Image (cartoon, rainbow over all chains, first blue to last red; front, side, top):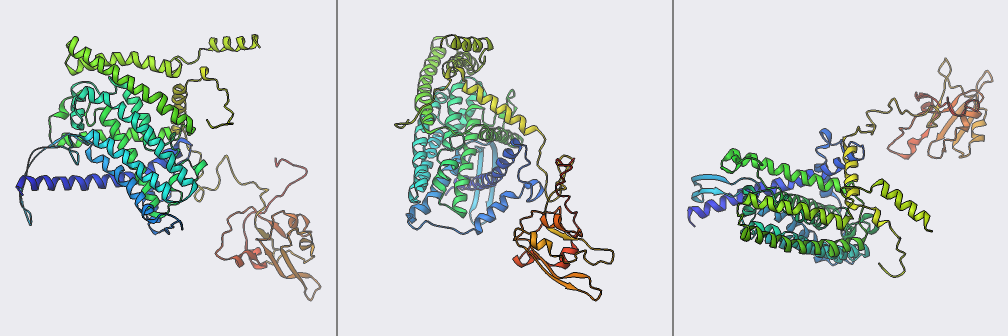
Length: 412
Length: 168
């Protein structure tokens, strides 16, 4: 092995350890954050008994789950019953590996380490665990793997409720996977590359994609909720109908793995939204963060964390606001609204990009972004007018309501 | 929908889902910033807005006279009136002919906390108390004997007063 290869492996391992640790600790803390947010939204303080203001609650939960008895249904398929939690846990955690967490760090490292010998690393180090050229496709592929864990958990438990939960999960995840994948095609159309660092770089040159691709963001956010099995799309769990759905037969640490997987999924979706539509680690209105350096890396990682955390909070906010969808409503939303919407949007954006770049010749990313933003204002208004019958912005005019009521009363 | 399911006619033209969602989110966010209403129980047991009623009927208390003897004269009315049959009373008599309880035990697990014993007592000796923290490590600790009933210090219940039915 050359010193360069050794250096690459060394830094990859360091990044891996750091990201994995932060992810696990973060996920544990998110369970606390969720309960705190739930409490605050219901005028309660939330858990506050273990440690100062409840900060050690995740630790207590973890210890409890480790020392609890593991039960196994007598007629469960043992191998799959054991495999399912791992199958849902691994894809959820692995996704964070390809997302750039901060500005690339210029490294000039050369040292003679014991046992391994001369190790060097020169140049810009991307701040993602694995800088994949196909990062985007990797994410789509792995996020759809998560459904195996849930479906197998439901099936192998050999329980009615678990099975229904597993079936619902597979139907739901497959339906929304389509809309999710299609909603991201416009991002690829603009950035012209599937790697996350290119997508972030493109947003730094032009506008954050939330503006020129608002509808993509909208569809992606909704499908993201469905992909994480969170309210209002938590039909696979649906505690009021299915006890706990696919994980009703699981106990102790196996159950914990499902919880960790759920929260890891939330982190991933939030990080994806931040990366794809909110400029990743970009600090707006300045180019200082792109210059490269240790300080820039640290600060941009903080910015990325803030963006991600906002979207994690948003997921929780929605959970404690909206009730659960009915199953046919869920399917109708996925297949009849989001899928045609994202398909039509791809066509519109593709045509618009062709017109802007070839006919008008505005190849500057900023101009192009602004032109698309103007188009999106129009499209957004149109879509919400059709989807929502025009009352998103206006509300039902009081006179119209009175007129409708009197017309009904006048014509019995 | 499945066959035979009644589909309600919903006011689709009147409803804006996104607007309703945004309104709901504004509401939950407003609640997040409001004051918490939870009373931190073991530290705070009452607030200015809420305290336990003086008519609360909790575990019993036997009042004593100036010499520290129980006021009970072992008349036997309380075991008689008790609907749950939880009072065990064995009367005794001293040299002066005064009756006193040899054994006075109340099984707090059998008790239904009706407060009849307090109402019927001619000497105002046995009372139900304004008290609710009763946990013990074994079941037999819930049979309160005379000594323990006398040792209780919590306030006694005022019960329901027909002259003042609302407790004002």
